[in-house]
Length: 521
Image (cartoon, rainbow, N blue to C red):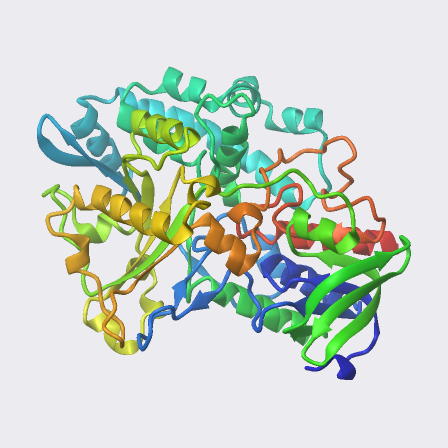
């Protein structure tokens, strides 16, 4: 739609049609508010999209965000979304060589199978019982904390009372996570599997005094009140397509190809200047919701920029003609790749990789985790591909901060991709390259994105997938009632950089909409 065929004044203008902006738009429009969503790109969805990245191949991959845990069922129900997820039958598989023999740890498939897998790896029941106790504790915390994400922010003391477990509070909120991991588990591989949830997109050591690793871990174990990470049926784009449809059905107007460039506000009324194909236009609104990073918000309002953010991940999408065989003869690849397949993620390996990256070097053994969407949800593959045994693979690499790519992003990307895949190949009975499909132009179906690529493509500051360091899910001084407020009374931050943001959750979008509706009385 053009700038000239939209009303000029709205109850709310939302900048950014990623999933949080669309959640906010749908809630506000359903409440009878007039809503305009401005999106810089030519499509909705932001980082939560499905696309066909390989020429001539009918496979819709979740190109950036790829699993769902933090999206509350409440949002799906409230908005009447046509969206489903499927549970993964296997939680994780971690290959390792012990006593010169390839083996591994398979978690999932039922309690008995998991207990036996721990016993085979560690020689007894100690580690499995420790695992049960530890995740029993995180499960209790999840059931108490997750429902608070769509409520006004509790105080720190209120959340502590709600959790009602001083050991859990100390473990997760007060001391570096590494202390609990080392206190609870003895096996290096088991310790590493536990720690990985603290390092997704977070460049930190197990003993980092900032507790950045604790905050990351907390958000990765509380989703849905269980900590389970599920597969979006139809790919991640199915969620944002459903959200866009719900917002439009409720009356919201979504303008793609419209880039917001400035917000002028007196705290009561705001003007949003945006660039269109026809030139600049202005939309007037009572409230402006910014579904972008705090850095982008500061640029739009002319405020001082926040502290620099830095991402620390490698994202790789692949399409295979077949799943590779494993060196571990006791594990079926269809199970190993269905869950999270951990590579070079032993506890000591993670510490070494972090130390090397902190010193300005690429990790010698880059840690990563992989999963196969199509094993759980084959609908993302075109009709003939699934029948022929084709599969997707998604790889997420850790401990690769943006600073490592500044000297030559393309060259470092290729170097890191080679060494990351070499770590995987060490556990395969055949090279992964032999399993890769080729596109219509004869090129291998593999693409890799560094933090600098994500900054360029999606405007993630420093390529940080959370927009900035994750926050504790309780009120901070000056943080506002919902965690979305800014110093401008009628400008709200509804992106991942809001308090309780990060991940595909819709929580900041929901909370910003609630703040607007409360303000209106």
